[in-house]
Structure formats: C-alpha cells, structure tokens
Image (cartoon, rainbow, N blue to C red; front, side, top):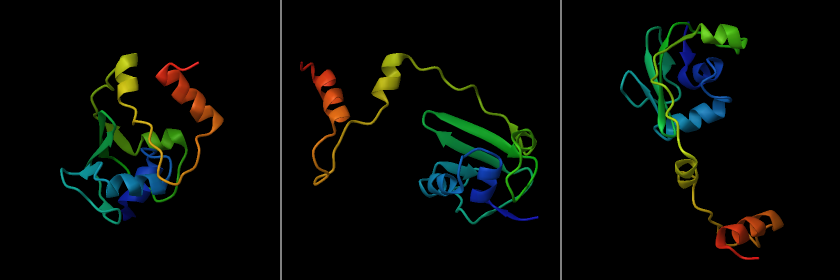
Length: 125
C-alpha cells in the first residue's frame, strides 16, 4: 500500500489536519530518513520521520501504513516513538519565544482586546 507523506502524518495524528502537515513539509520542518521530502512522497515501512515542533523534534519510525483516519488507539500502533522528552520551559522562556506583536500596514485599528494587551505591556493606565 502506498500513502502520501502528508496524508500519513495526519492519519498517524502527528498533525491535526492534512493541510497543517503539508505546510510543515513545505516549511522544511519534516525530514524522512534525513532528507527534506515533498508532500507527495510515499511513506514506506521503517521510514524514520523527524518532525520539528518549535524547540522539540519528534522522531518516529513508521510501523504501519493506513490511508484513512483511524481511532487514536490504532493510530498509536502506526508509529514507534523514539523522541527525546519534551523540554520544560520556564515562564520567561515561554514568553520570550512568542512572536513580537506586529500589525500589517492597512490592517486597521487594534481591537479593544489588543489595545488592552498593548496598554498592559507598555504600562499604561
């Protein structure tokens, strides 16, 4: 059986949707056997797949191939997870990793919620 990489990543529940998997592949956040694949690449048994999730890289070995979504219990049988444990971040590190607040030109005025957030950040009253 042959299954596309983006489809398999969704079926194995490494990504919630196929479009998220395709985007991660396009942004070079997924490697198969050490190489940068394309979304249409076929997955084979025993392939080593590395998926970057921010500061953590999840490493899995393909143990089963399915084309259609399966229950969570069955999805766990499709992979062998050999990833290192997810690193624990302090509160400050977590805040520092968030992207800076930017507004695109022509986006309009900030919403009331955004204005409050800006005011809190800048120390306004």
